[in-house]
Image (cartoon, rainbow, N blue to C red; front, side, top):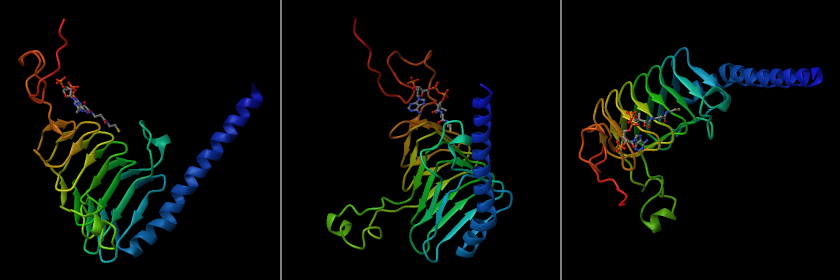
Length: 229
Ligand SMILES: CC(C)(COP(=O)(O)OP(=O)(O)OC[C@H]1O[C@@H](n2cnc3c(N)ncnc32)[C@H](O)[C@@H]1OP(=O)(O)O)[C@@H](O)C(=O)NCCC(=O)NCCS
């Protein structure tokens, strides 16, 4: 028993040591490299695990003060499928995270313009992208102009938005302040400030309560399958 406990403690301390070393490496080595590459980093950013940041030439990326960027399953309740990925894809692209944004295992890709406001909470494994990445035209798709020919529209996410785990926020989406996006939703259009939306495509789920709406109607105003007896 004692041997098992000793081995477990040793294993855990080695793991902790490895995590701490990565965190120190990020702070001392990667942060200065990212800054030199043109990333603007605010103060007090917490990096939990090593994220992936890449910049296209002449593009800009900024991460506000006090953001929490989690790429390590041990440090977030749901765990992450992959590290946080922040990328600008084309010259002139802008990717901006406001102050106090918290994200885990999130991917944000900007070919044009992706802006995320202050204090947003972005659940595990969310994807936010302002481009389709590939052209819809098969000839362009098999050429070097594939990304340049892909559909692309800016994404704007306001302040204090909560995005549920596994959601996709796609090109042209705008999300107003304080809106909530349900887990596994797909957002392609405008979400009003303060709205609660969910599903694919994401729709308002805060309609009349179950008790007051007509039988068989869903919160989004659709019809529910009612089992016949
Ligand atoms: C969107 C959310 C906040 C709504 O919670 P709520 O206000 O308590 O809403 P309810 O659970 O009462 O559901 C209201 C309606 O929305 C629907 N709904 C809720 N979440 C949904 C979702 N993610 N996708 C599709 N429909 C959803 C419900 O089925 C219900 O519809 P009905 O009334 O027609 O049956 C919540 O369901 C959610 O998705 N939370 C995100 C959790 C998460 O990912 N956390 C991140 C951790 S890292």
